[in-house]
Image (tube, rainbow, N blue to C red):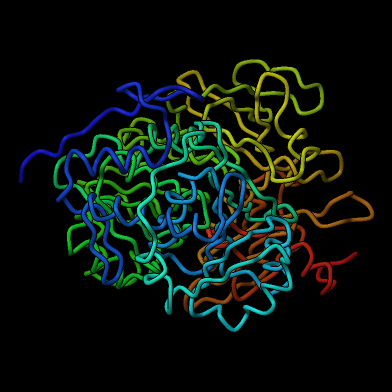
Length: 532
């Protein structure tokens, strides 16, 4: 196979690309259409498009949007499982200065209507599974002028568009994408990204770093999550062909790998399902050249199993957040496999290029001493522009100098490895002592009867908060709450040990695999479990 021409992506917040062109998302697609027009760019279902075909498709969709009156500043939404249309729309609408919104398709009616009312789209592309909610959607957002049914008329509508060039006034700092936060700490907010932020993310993407001719990306994580859509757009920007899956089932992932995908990003829960599914699934993972993971901490047993099952695969952890347009640290494969520093398996990694960090006392807002624990603040051209329509909320997290307050508590060692200790809002204060839930979770997870655990603080009239462990049982096991508490007392200081253990069938999670601790607090409070 001939070597694929590649270009380095070097952009700042508003900087030019390598050849002096402005850093806009659709420029990357146009470049690959010009330099390797006949090589395959993307596969989704029955669609297999070369770079030239995809570029022409985007030009026609741009024209179709113009015919519907869509222009600069307008918002369009795509509501469906992973679909090529989501990337189509980002590239085409973005070429006009319009903004694509990708709502979480798993949202319940009240949640979805909130998001649509908040972003006020003029046009919505609706998947077949959501057509029966069209009336609800239109009522939620009176701004909607056009609804295009994805399975019935999207392709014909797109094909009917007159090929149209990008608008001349679109700039690198023009908003192009809104992703809603997962709501792990409250109501979801629309996070606004510019062209330049997404391209800067592509520059440091673990998925595309050091890709070789013959490599192919697998996009299976939800595109409504920055980890999914960021990786997909990074592949476009770097000229890496990709396969998009509607659903990340083990069987679909295996088939995609067997058909040529060599690198992918997965959340730990999916990795665990793959490892537990069978030999074929483990062999597929082991054949990857690169596996990036993130979105939630990876339990040590799952990570150890992956390292053992994938001895020849580069395994890289990424840590970041929606507001930072993906990862700001990476834990390299070398660090994962360094037998002299196994403690680094608990690290989030080291800073990627073009990212600065401060570790700040959340009370005094002064930098802590080296090695001490504080709130992580990051500054990077990948940062969001702000929360859609919420200047006050934006001002709470973006502070002087462009630093973004993460709400994550962490520390950095002398080698620059960052360790996440807890969410600022998840610190449990019991009897005047601070308890960091990941420390307790790591101990409870070692109990042989426990499969998964989330540790939260519940109100306590004497101690302020009660350390509460919410667990699921390992397969074939029964959890004895008293036994779990006794188990932790041999490993943790008394004030850190759970005073209550609640057994549930499963932990509530969002689409990116993060445990929704605020839902646990609400459900446990409602059930009055462990109340004093």
